[in-house]
Image 1: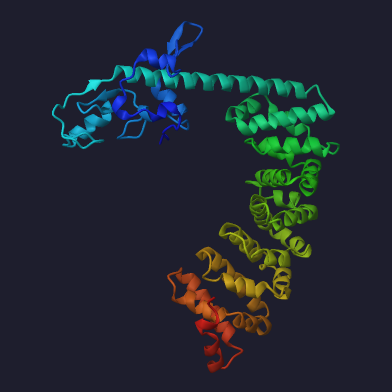
Image 2: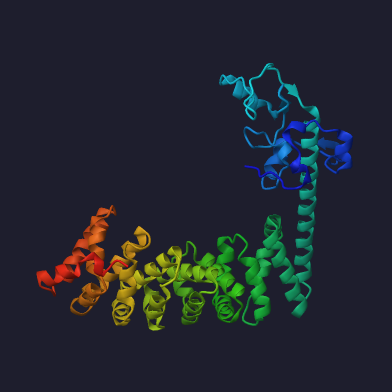
Length: 444
């Protein structure tokens, strides 16, 4: 749906749509030769529908919008009330048995419609100007991208950094630049700039460009070479927050659809770098990007033990308070994956805040968070029932489980809650356990 413009022309009232063409030209709404483009074989009139589709995101003056469809008019017609509509829309309105003006709801004393040629020409001219300006900018961008790519092949040092920075900014700002880079072999050339002797200044800019491109399988395979991955991980550990996020996103892109990439990518240096990134809560986009990649990396079972060994469990447990639901779900998913191995369960048991923090999440966030939290609690309570079950009950687990059982959650989830409740009750007499199930002790 088009958004009405806030500019001067958008303030024109619908009841004064019959505008003078000479005034429109003077005000800059209508210009000479608008709507005509040179093709090399003469002049070609532009298609209004095509222009409107390609300019969909632009603010359109309110006077050009049909009050019925809220879309730009191509064939405007005016009723006897002075209101103007797209012909097809008002004809449909009449066919439904309405003989009123849709805007004013006045009964029509004349059901004929009058083509508003003046407004039609204004609409066409306005879209033509915007469309041709957009095409000109697009051509300028494409030319600049080609020029920068050629320049990059000649320059080195700081001049190369500046050229890469310009290319990154153009790629980020203009969608047409992405296509131009691909069509001119830019991906392979830019990727070739990454290597064991690449400076971090060059590497950061290269990564900032690559993360905005659609990489094919060959490009991904090239970037997964050990020397290049090692450089990307080094830059992740030492770069700015923007560079860290770009490195994280690029590594995630390289791992998409590649089951073996985790083993090649998941070095201790990467895991440590990602933990540092997710602990920096001042930058939520970095937290989210880091957690997404950690989840992907930990999906490979061979990596989980290494992740536990770098102290990931207590750091993730301490990270949970204050996270939004999306990040919280990712943390729980990672911890659940780690709870699938003995080392992970031991680390979860030994962390003093695991049980209190996870119990608090039951029935507090999404159903998926509750499911993941239950899975983690089940793993550690089953792993060390005498020690963990009593700690969980004291943290209010029993009452929370009763809430889950009585909720509208998935039956499988409710069944797991009942099993965990039974496991927790084994160390208590009936009366003591019942007293610990009181909701007033638990719900805060």
